[in-house]
Structure formats: structure tokens, C-alpha cells
Image (cartoon, rainbow, N blue to C red; front, side):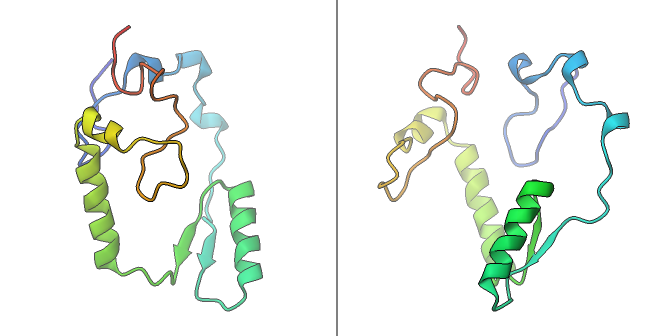
Length: 126
């Protein structure tokens, strides 16, 4: 398998074999439909009911959407990305200090993975 950069600012540059689907199970580009219009959700609108409905439809039909007029400054967005990159570079032991399934905790790391049991997630060899 060729090594390929999958994101910038992240220390991992390849996928573990356990994350790679067999060729026969992969989607074929010839069967994928093009999408010319990504849904755009206007958060500046006063009609909250309409916004919620638009988000629901976008999630249902497209799985993703673009948000405009969200009032988050470019500086704040860039800083959030910096912090996320800093966190991604922390050692697993540091990240695990924040891991919790307790929704009452103000600061926590949570995931749908079974962190304590899934050896794939943190490169633990069986």
C-alpha cells in the first residue's frame, strides 16, 4: 500500500490496514452521483423553524451542508483549527486523561469508538 498524506497538520500519513476496505467493497466512482448544489444554510434568518427544517433536510438528503452568516469570525475559526491540530498531536496518554462518557463533564473527549477495547483506534498491536 502506498503511503499518502491524508490531512495537513496531522501526524499520521497513512491508514492502518484495518481501516482499508477490500477493493470489492469500495464504492465505484462510476456509480457515484455528482452533486452540483451543496445545501447552503443561512443562519442570519429570523425564521428559526425554517433553519431547523433546512438543516434537517440537508442532513437527510446530502449528509452535509455549508453554513453562512454564522457570525463566527475568521480569526476564531482559525484559532479553533489550531487548537484542534494541537490536540491531535498530543500523546494518546494525554488525550485519555480527558476521555469520559459522562455528559455532565464540562471538558471531555468522547467518541463512538470503544476506546478501552478497540485496538485499531490507537495503534495498539494485538
